[in-house]
Length: 113
Length: 114
Image 1: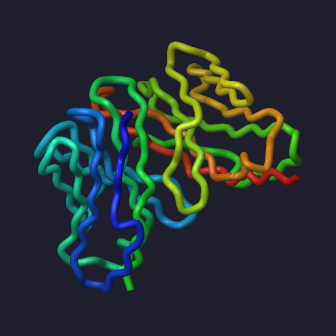
Image 2: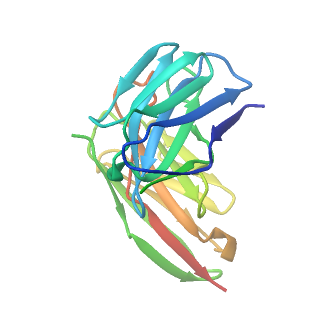
């Protein structure tokens, strides 16, 4: 069966520091991968998606970047965090092709202080 | 741009009653509509989904209906139980179907009182 792992689960970082959140998926190949952000009490906003290694699409202008160095690995990064980057970050995956279900990881809580 | 409106934002029901959450979407090309349940501090879990070629789908106490003409879809939970308490999100697909992009509603906090 497929599983998704996301870490770290919680993170407190000072303003201006770098960020790296990592996500890996097991039990599937060539998945579509996604990073979503959820502000407190709000819905989920798509930040990045990837349909293959090295292929990254950004949905909103922001202070963050994403990379996919391996087929089942997706990384969310920032060189210098802002206070507004605080939130709950969710990695998700689905099998490639149309109409398939998206599955979410357990999320990473980021607090920028 | 694409948008999904979800109502109500909060819903409180007595155990055993039914709960209904409604969503409207703006993109007439949307063809996939999942519903997710999110418990505090956890990632969303898919509970049911419906595709545009189907008007209704049921899974035990949960059902979803879709009205493509009106661009409405709704989640129905019958015989609610305290463990149904959570935040529920609707979503609609947008863009190329191969990308799997979803736009989410703002969520409904459901409280089931014992």
